[in-house]
Length: 100
Image (cartoon, rainbow, N blue to C red):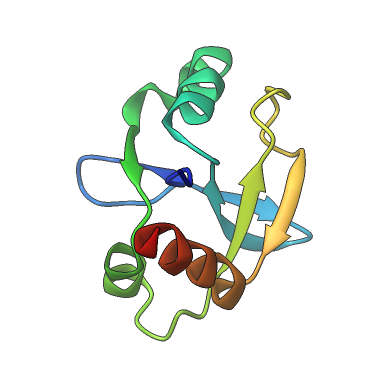
């Protein structure tokens, strides 16, 4: 069974972004457990709640999908360890997971 990636959002719908090489990127975690691990290590994230990543959620905030993603390595608490992902790669993985 494939894992569902998660993001963090505020109650007003704002999505957590991180600065990667001078550009904002949506922070993504491999699953809910990983995002909760990062929240425990970063108390400033208390204003955010975990939410499953869906294409519809991102398209509402970024209609042209003109955004990059950063898959956070939750073992490192600084939110700077991980790898960049482009929308096409991320959403193709999501579609494969939903089909499984």
